Length: 294
Image 1 (spheres, helix red, strand yellow):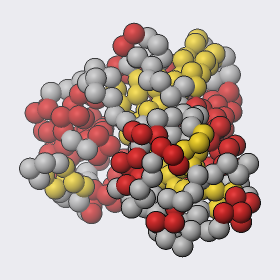
Image 2: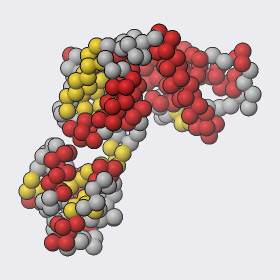
Image 3: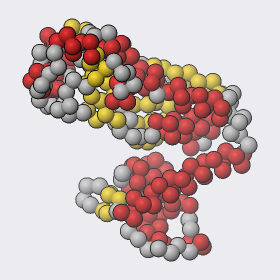
Image 4: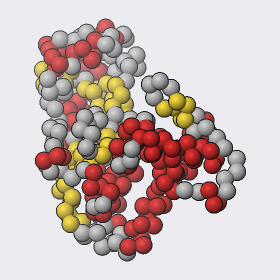
């Protein structure tokens, strides 16, 4: 694969990178503020310059080809470098000031944000960060937050959304609780246990039934929308809870009561206003969140 230096065009590289991350030309065009034909031409020009096909175009979606997958990591590195160069050139990486309001779920704010905020403090020590730790969605259009971390893609196309890594949630229970009630030998045995969590259990029973566990509201003696409280109730032996795998695995007193239970996939989206592109302090926080979570 040979790419002449004179043929390099950062706009084409950025078009490929955003298209790969967004999953479609239409979404990438919205994210970059371009028309879809313009974006499509940039991607095609990059393919021509590289001499490879980057996307397999189907009737429903764009799929990265093997060369596209191999090049994606390199282009992401270029994108990160471009942001760093921009900050360094303006001398603002240590002079970013102002207030940024982040909205995140209770669990995300507690277990994921602190190490990222520690790095942010070193990168931009003069920033004032306010965090809304709530499972209620903040309305970015009404300026209830500058950046939101959500588990579903926003429907408002005027917002900028970046998909981060998916995580998995699984069943966890304390060893003490399982010693007391007995460890289930089948999915059906889970139906005899007590569960905690689920702020509205009746709306979650279908999710459990789809995984072969037919529960009723009688299985739930303690319900809460708080991940931190669910964790503590599970640790203290109140019953079985559903927790992100990386959180539950941090506590040696917990174990997975059923390896046959199908994990629940949890998507994560980072959402901001379109002014992300021009507001330096929001961009700095957004990029660090994307790096730390993604």
